Structure formats: C-alpha cells, structure tokens
Length: 330
Image 1 (cartoon, one colour):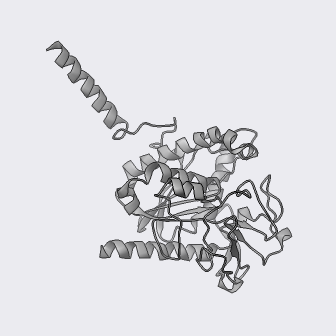
Image 2 (cartoon, helix red, strand yellow; image 1 turned 180 degrees about the vertical axis):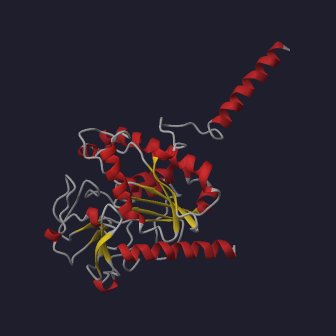
Image 3 (cartoon, one colour; image 1 turned 135 degrees about the vertical axis):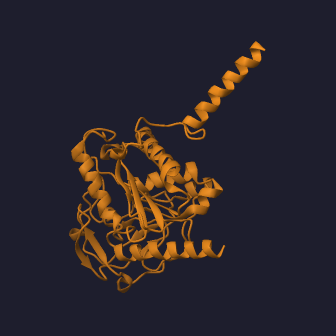
C-alpha cells in the first residue's frame, strides 16, 4: 500500500509538471511572453485572415554578444526595424513580433562555430515566444513565418524544431526568410524545409540575398555554400534574368514604417546558380552602401526586401489566397 501511494504521488507530480509547462514543453529562457511588454508587436490586425510571426533582424550594435531587453534605445531600434517590414504583411495578416535577446552585430565577426552559443541564446527566446503564441493566440489560424537576416535564421530554426509536426505543416502558409541562405545541407537534413518553386506554392520557404554581379562571397553566403533562392520578380529558381520592368516598386522605408521613397522599375535581377545568390546589375553600388560591418560595397543585404517591396507585398497575398482556396476546397 505504501509503495502504491508513493507511486501515485510521483505520477501526480509528473502530470502536474507536464501540464504546467504546456503539455510537456520546457521553457528555454527566462523571458516571460505572457507579459505583453516582451512583445514589440502584439496581435496587430485582429480582422486579418492569417497570422504572421515576425522576427527582427540584427539591430544591436553595442559591444556585447546578446541584446539586453532592458536597453530602451536598442529596443526602440528593434521596433523601428520591424516597422520597416510590417507593410509587406499587414494587409493580410495579424502581426506578432517578440523582443528577444538577439545576437549583437559583434557576434558575426566570429566563426560560425564560435557564433552558435550566442545564436542559441537568441533562439531560446524566439522558441519560447512561438510556443506561447501557439498555446495562447493562434487558435488554428494560418501561419506565416517571416524574418530578415538574423530573423530569417531564426525562422529556419523554428522550422527545424516545430514543423516536422503534420498539424503545424497544415497551418503553414509560407516562410519569408529573406537575407539568410536556405542552404542545401539544411534542406537535406530537414524535410519540412521546402524551398519555393514558383509564385503561389504554399508551405514553402521564400529566400534570397542580393549582391552586385562582381561580388564573389560574403560571411552570409560563402563561396562554398549552395543556397536555394527564388527570384522575387519572375518567381523562377533558375538563372533566367528578370528585367527591371517587372519590378513593381522598390520602397525605402523609415523606422516609423512610412515609405520615404518609392521607385518603380528600379532594378532587375538574376540568380547566380553557383552559390544561389541574387545578382542585381542595374543599380550604382555607390548609391546603396552596404552599411553592415564586414560587408563590402556592392553587397545589397540591407536592401534585400526594399528593392522588391511591392512584388513581395503582392506575393504574400497571392500565396495566402492560394492556401485558403486549397484548404477551403479540401
């Protein structure tokens, strides 16, 4: 009897831990995403058809390895960087974007191996935020994952951790992982990471990063890396050039989210298939400085989505409409 009582108590303890942690989920970080102040954007756009889980790019330029969530100046830049992207998604999606202990710019001067512990600290927050969002906010709604640069890296990590689950795969509209390579090794290892093949397939990754034709490598896409890239003007994955006449509008956006200038037909592009990089031949590289430490003139990384803003904005709607049509018919 005594042993049975001990076994019963032990079972109850285990069950209580199971439910307290969210059906077996164990928090990875100390950030509480039940506190709304830990969200840069929370549930903006209630009437929209889908949700976008949006992850901020690198804004922390301080001499540290991970951003501090008590740093109000950096948090202001964090919100500003997100505001620059929200216009791509806000017409069709309710937006959630967590603050997280992102890796600071200093981390990217390290080797990929030495960088990883700080990236993992960043991802622990992102993972906790996504779990909280799924448990408390999603309610079965279609999901768009989106991020630029470090934010794109975090999107891939979410796909790796969570989206081998068939139910979540069914909810996934698309992943806009712009400015960080969707590399061959990743795709081969994780079958849930599926590169886009056209304009309106869904459950797929849309990825590209921009350079001038003469650039041979960057720390983002080294010479020996092969990335899966799609052309945001003609939606092809081969080297077929897209003329600048297909560019519906490059938009250069302020931290407020306001478009400060828009230029139709600014540039065309084509994919260099040797690395899977998007080449932009039609602009003067001196007019678009790289800004990012470690990236040479002619690396258009910070302009990746701005060069093709209107085409991307339209494509988000196209993919969501196709997703909704398919799931309604099904």
